[in-house]
Amino acid sequence: MSKPNADQFEMWNGRVGQKWARLQDKTDLMLNNITDALMPFAAAQPGEHVLDIGCGCGTTTFRLQMAVSPNGSVAGIDISAPMLDVARARAQAMNADIAFIGKDASTHDFQPVFDLVFSRFGVMFFDDPVSAFKNIRTALSPKGRLAFVCWRAFKENDWAFVPYVAAQPFLPEQPKTDPHAPGPFAFADGDRLKDILAKAGFGNIRIEKLDTTSSLGKTAAEAAHESLNIGPVSRAANDLPDETRAKAREAIEKAFAGHVTQAGVAPKAACWLVGATR
Image (cartoon, rainbow, N blue to C red; front, side, top):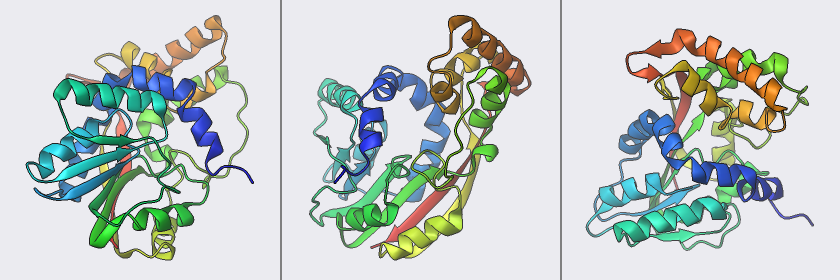
């Protein structure tokens, strides 16, 4: 019997995980507006005990710790060893008492001790999302709640769609994939997402649109560079020859020229804010 989420383990402990660990400051900037919206939506309170799923390099975990201080606690869980290494080093540097758990939240044996289960883009990658959320629900105390953010449709997210369309003439042909397959945009269908959570046993499910922007840098050139390092274009362009990669970068830079503002390049980002109770 194959290990659940085996492809994700391989990806997030290989080149992708290493890259995200190395580019932690860039991804934090990219997702900052979304994090700022998710924090009040989740509304972690002083004294609460919180689990951060897909905690990565720990940025959201540290923000949650500030919210629940002085008497609360936060634990982060992730399958990516490279990113957890960064999170633990940051925690040590800050003298922060946070447990970072290198396990799969879809199968980990939780105790029902958390008032809040929180995630910023960490729950869209499960092979069996209903089973995964059933297990995640076991981490919640009887009155506990769930709060997370996930992407809406690929075509609604200019930070990903604009560079992909621009680079497409230079990319190898991509296989057609199931839109519901594990991946960043797996929960684009809000009705399907609500059904998954209901089947997993959650109640009081609410799904709200979040329309914001994602910062990709100060210039179109910087945004093109980031797109080739993080996101759908990055995965498709992994093995391009240098000359072809340069042409793709030039095409992306031209496409982002119309998105440059005084604040930099900040294309549209379309998300769901999702809440539920145990």
